[in-house]
Length: 350
Image (cartoon, rainbow, N blue to C red; front, side, top):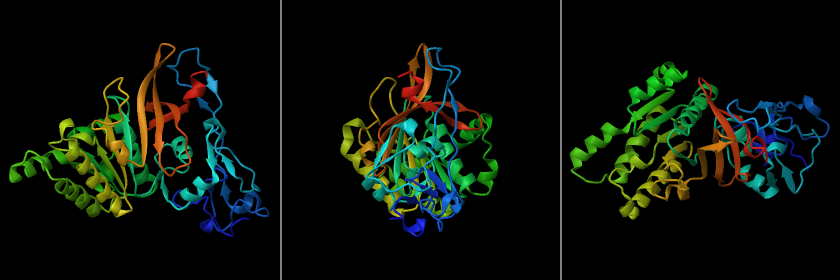
């Protein structure tokens, strides 16, 4: 039985105006595209089919051009089934009960359309996500793309917490890459918080070898509330645990738990925290506890295919989202960021 309006339908993701059942954007939620007599004139904006090309660097053993449907167009008169088939190129089956659970959440776009589709609409609003990967995998690019999507497309203020790199150096690097964010910073839509001076002041004042989690949490949350941020990036998370070590795992665990829970209690701030892992390691984080607190985990990496190195994005965990583990091959393009080239299994010739 169809809902009279999309607002009352568990398949309707309000934040992204996306129907998880039909795999379509909804133009007018008052005229559901699933109602039999509404037809396509109901306001449904069915996402177009996109043909993606394989990256030039990939070996000739990989097909030169592969048609990949990003979102599958579904008939307007689709009935609710026990199992809903997501975009065919991803091979993801969505149990109905998962969609019912997902329908109670608002989603925010990651900035990568194919990833949004695989996650059933994007990141869950107000939750925390871990982006893990070795050096040079694209974690910072992913993070900035996430913030820029919110700032430019949804007018959502964002905060970038710089832990390893001075803010001035980061902004110069972004401009060179093709992302001049100076105007967004001037308008306070994007804000960059350098935590290193903050750490130094606390350390000198308190004369501590470790910093209590509340000091770091207060510093971040005060800035988030000041600019009314809806998106937050902590890049990377490990050095933020000032004074933490592998030997003091209880301190680390408590620190991270307090940090994540305090941010999520705000309810409206979606957080991306990055974690650098050693090359060739199967670890997802430095301390081994970050992944248990995150709602979702994305792993970025480099792999060799046919003698060529390609970039890979792997959806490792997606709590409350109708997604099976899935891999994509992607490129990093100046001024655009992460651009998906297609599913790993297809481009690899599987």
